Length: 195
Image (cartoon, rainbow, N blue to C red):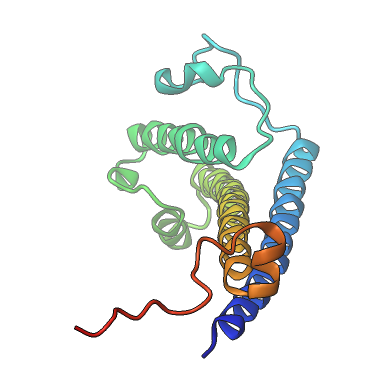
């Protein structure tokens, strides 16, 4: 392959990377915007700082609205999960069959064996709702994480494209001469003199 062919190939690949980077950047902004808009519309917020319902390890989130993936993950895994655990532990004090159970599936199985137990049925409903909200929030976090990865990939593609444009310009003699890069790559290969 000649220098010109390699340089033109570098330009073509750079162009493709610019298109891919642009699409990744647009996709990132679209996803991130959607996650924000959907979470903001739900008006989910942490309990006020200092309140007994807010676990000690997330007091810094007190009163904050959940509007991005990172906050959604904290709300799901450290706020809702804690409340679900507290509800199950409280119910286990009055119903020893619940002791050691931690999941909706376990509680639901127990409730099917005792369908007339209204407090157990209420607990199952509460845990189910909490787990569904957790699932939705963790999905929002996952999509927001994907948007962040796409954002980084876009700028990586842009950076590689710039390097390929510079390399291509240096390798194509007509372009290299015009932009002053001809001295970077010799026009003819240097062959040592015999001898």
